[in-house]
Image (cartoon, rainbow, N blue to C red):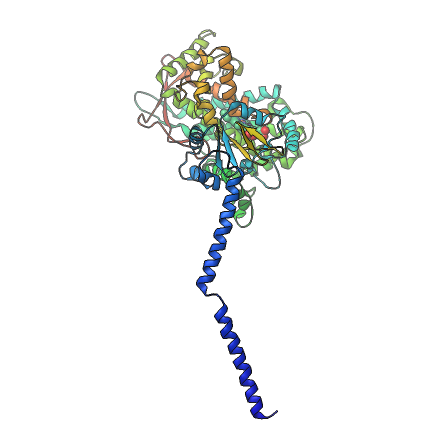
Length: 537
Ligand code: HEM
């Protein structure tokens, strides 16, 4: 090959490459075209996804936006802080079954709620409960979604609350009622010479925390004695509790938070304060009891951890149950205590009647009254006071302490509620606010706090009302384990406090601030206690 031929060949191959490049460039799409096609494809996929999301339950009435995204509910938890009122208002607008999120419907029918929760129903717990998984490796009963496993676990938990153990538990409640009275005496008795206002929102929590921790661990953590937060528990739970509402609407976030790197920020057994400290103490308490030599435990040493372990709960699971006991037993009862007191303080006629009932009860007892040695009213006696019970039931009704959706999942065979077919996997949420406020059961004055309605009702109506309000403790296989302890705490507190003190709000224009990010939470509830005339305290 000559040099000339070589040069010609080299030139023609470079021309060829250049031509190829130019023609490729000519047919390749311009950047705007790539962006436009990608956007079109994404829009198409999103539309398909949204259509599919909407279509599944498109026959259930509800706002369009809610059928496309759960973020509307998240917004009402996080920003508007009115989630339960919002869900009830949707029911009023759209009917007895309303679609509140793509896969979640809500109802306010006591009968439906009882059926969904009944032992026979194949419904399982919904994803809403995922927030109560304190550890992804282990379950506490409240978070268990598999019916068979939860039946076995609940069967182990129940005997720990039975018979004579309730007597022990009542003694624990009495001690904390006494601690509360002692706190008023020590620091918060107002006189004409000066007001010693108490932030009741926090003190209600101190009381219920001391009851829950003494029932669980055998002795209280001592919030009332210290009259302050212990181990920064409240400081951290005040941040965490509203988050429970958000996680209820976006359950997948629970797994994100338990995965690296967010898990580094989550409370854990290594923590020395806050929620992590509770985990830590629960672990220690369980280990301590497992390592203890066998033999009979005196009733005075009885606590729920011992009861659970004795009934066969694995130690690691007992830790989870301890955490649930403290979380489930505290905020619920505090809410009921605060709002029942608020209702009494802002309705003078009911306050008088409640106090008269307590006085009438004690007028039949031998005098004189010694506040330090007289026993705290027994649960059995307190249950003979209809008006005080009516006050508590009215508070439960208007501000249900367990106000969230508490959704349960439709079983494989599907279900029909209020004439609407619900396919497998649909989450059925409850509106306890709706159950407590619907005029069909409560009459036209359903929004009004009026304990008298309970005394006026005939036997049949009373039964229906009681069965409806009782659902604040859920029902069937999900019924609250601490129901009687909660009732004891409330009844005993009202009887013993009203017996000794006159209570009044401090800020008449705004007794407290109420918000509803997951359930009814209050701040700035200042009250004053004044000794009743002629009563030694
Ligand atoms: C006014 C007070 C209370 C209310 C309104 C209340 C409400 C509830 C509700 C609605 C549930 C069922 C959740 C569900 O699975 O659907 C529940 C479960 C539970 N509650 Fe309560 N509760 C109260 C007080 C207490 C107390 C004082 C304790 C313990 C000291 C407690 C311990 C528990 C436990 C351990 C569970 C889980 C039961 C299970 O998994 O089956 N509760 N509570």
